[in-house]
Amino acid sequence: MKEMSNHQPETTAITSGRDDSQSLAPPIWTSTTWQSSGLEESRQHALATHEVGNYARYSNPTVRAFERAVAELEGAEEALAFGSGMGAVTSVILALCSKGDHIVAQRQLYGGTVAFLNGPCARFGIDVTFVDGSSQAHLLQRSFPVGPCS
Picture 1 (cartoon, rainbow, N blue to C red):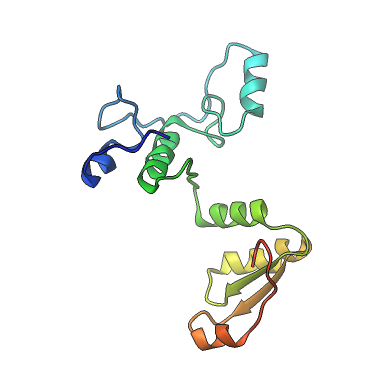
Picture 2: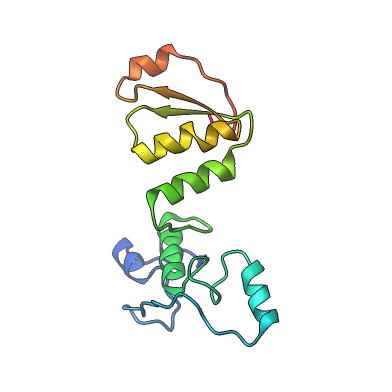
């Protein structure tokens, strides 16, 4: 992450995620794969975490610039961008929750999220309680287990 500057928020928003050498309109990389010098370089890229230069599903220079911009604007070390909301939801749950954990979720959710919570989460031993998210009184009357995913 770049050191926070003394710029106005508008300037930070325009320049975030870019190297000093980049224009304000960085290139859009539409490639899905990149050439490598050989099998060893391809293996290293494939095993690297969030490495640009192998396959766009794992990383892409345009997406990395966007992630760096979001991280800088939010004052975070890193940010991750996803191609879908379900990709983001699934990644967070699988990264933070384990067998025996408990998730409290509102009933008013996207159907794919409900299916994920009722299907794979249940198979992995992650308990889910659905509550009426539109009623604060309903939430205050209930007690839930406390854990990493609660």
